[in-house]
Structure formats: C-alpha cells, structure tokens
Picture 1 (cartoon, one colour):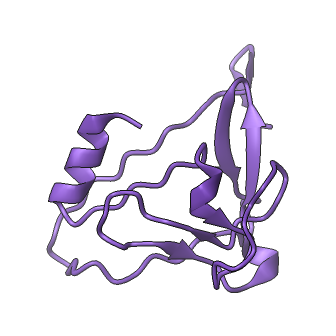
Picture 2 (cartoon, rainbow, N blue to C red; picture 1 turned 90 degrees about the horizontal axis):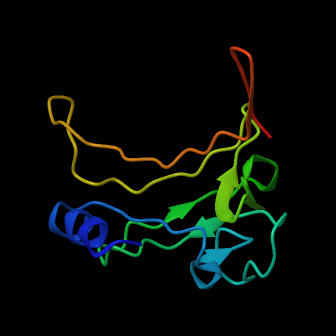
Length: 116
C-alpha cells in the first residue's frame, strides 16, 4: 500500500482496506476467526487508515471471499447479495466523496471482458 494512499485516507476521515494483509481480515463480523487462506469468507476487514472505519458483514451468506489471482489478492463479491457494511463517516447528502478501487481484468476475448 502506498504511503500516498495512506496519507490521503488518514487526512480525510477516509478508509483503507488491504486484502493482501490477512492480519486485517476475519471470517466473522465480530473479528474472532482470522482469515488464514484464500477462498475463505471475509466478515470483517480492518481499516488501515487509522480512522477505525472497519467494514463488516454479519450475514454469513452475504460475505465476499478472499481470492488470489495473477499475483494479487482481492475480495470477490457474488454480484447478488455480497457486500460489506461501512460505519457512518459523517457524510451528508450534499457532501462529495472520492472512491478509489483497484480492478483487475481476468481475460479479454474480442470485445468481451470475462471476469473470474
């Protein structure tokens, strides 16, 4: 994780998640069962910005899965009901926010992008 990303997240009441750091992820929302390998569910991921904006998912069936593909770790969501809940961060309807997400393309066939 770059020092620039850490500084931006910390200075702006942001959040910073790093799926490559298994010590920040837990299989349950309470944070008692650590994620120790890929293909395990992620029920809680700790915010590395220092702001304490940890993300959780109390519903077992709605948790993303830790994956490792092409040399990178990530969270895989099923596109149906998987999601992580974020704490209230003081944003209001007229506030602006920036979201930065890293996305990897698994393969391209003609004009079709195939996701794993």
